Length: 157
Image (tube, rainbow, N blue to C red; front, side, top):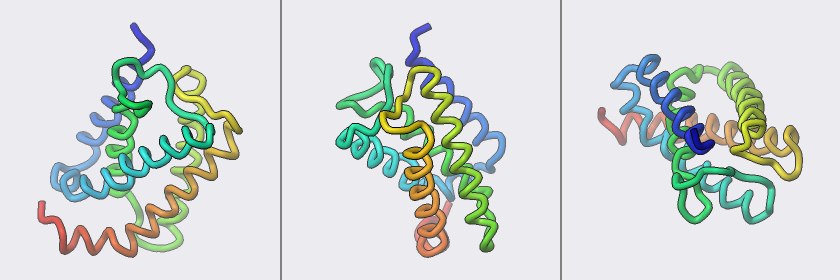
């Protein structure tokens, strides 16, 4: 089995978890924000990391275009649907939840590194913590400030 099937496997597992753990109504409710916080920001990080040679995805075979793999942005979209669905409403729990998610993401990125489908050129710990911490803290802050209003007024599932 080619190594690029790993992308399909973990994206499929995340999708299955989302279907099992999140109601259909909530999937629709968080889908647009999941695309923004997940896919759009992941593509931003992919491009930035390639520009500064900080790391990136490897061995995505036919599942990519212009050095951007297709499956990770989809996986991050699903991940952020799950993330937003279980995000606590009150401080400091929402930021604590984000911090725990940061450490999970750092561990998972190192698993992907060990599988040979991702690499960090600077550090397997420092750079991922900086990226995921800024990403997740921005997500919680932006969701609290704008995302809840967007869901309330902008999307009717």
